[in-house]
Amino acid sequence: MTCQTAPWRAVVLTLFPEMFPGPLGHSLAGRALERGDWVLDAVNIRDFATDRHATVDDNPFGGGAGMVMRADVLDRALESVADPRGPVIYLSPRGAPLSQDRVKSLAAGEAVTLLCGRYEGVDHRLIEARGLEEVSLGDFVLSGGETAALALLDACVRLLPGVLGAPESLAEESFERGLLEYPHYTRPAEWRGRRVPDVLLSGNHAAIAAWRLAQAEAITKTRRPDLWSAYLGAAASVS
Ligand code: 9D3
Image 1 (cartoon, rainbow, N blue to C red):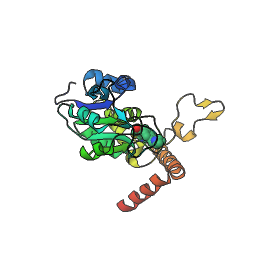
Image 2: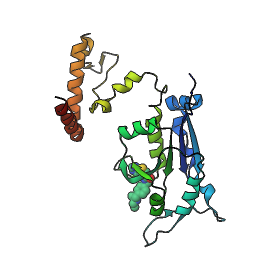
Image 3: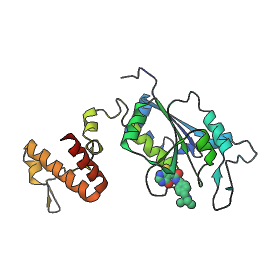
Image 4: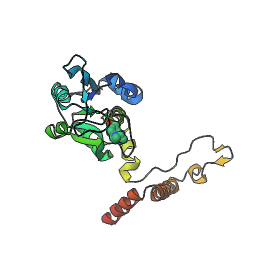
């Protein structure tokens, strides 16, 4: 199947364009990229520096450790994005945590532009002037936005029509139900003295579904009290 409308497009602004498509050139996303189901443009921010040394950063006003990416250089890089469609996202540890809901809305759109920071981050005036949406992967420290951009793109691309193949497997995804996944098993039925739970070998599909739901609920309750509360809230509002 070929794509009737324009393919989903990602533009990534980075000081390390050679990091793209990187892992997204393999597996599912890589085959989708080869098929033209999506398009990836990596823009080298350094190409928009104007001085002899191609400077992209400078010392922070007010002092302190580290360097800050210059607003003027980044603004020219953003201006160079032809036919900008969709949101411009700045991958930032200060951003709103990425969620599957946001991933879905991005994948449903026609394009995203991703700005990857290095050093301490970008001049705050650029964020304001361009109305950048700040997105984080969570409360841990990366060395830059590139690996976060790769993760965000992976999450979006697998949702594009035709990329994953079977849409029913998406509907069953744990986050759709608001629960973590039940445990999975395959052959051999016994390995290092550990047997697969009998119910999974029983052929009783109702019993298997009930066991899996109970397992998903138990693991969610212990590992993710935040998801568990939301799940209980959702269950209460439908009954
Ligand atoms: C001195 C304070 N800095 C280091 C702890 C703050 C800082 C600046 C830049 C920390 C990390 C980064 C680079 N990180 C990202 O660009 C980033 C990120 C992350 O670190 N964690 C989770 N999500 C993201 S999205 C982009």
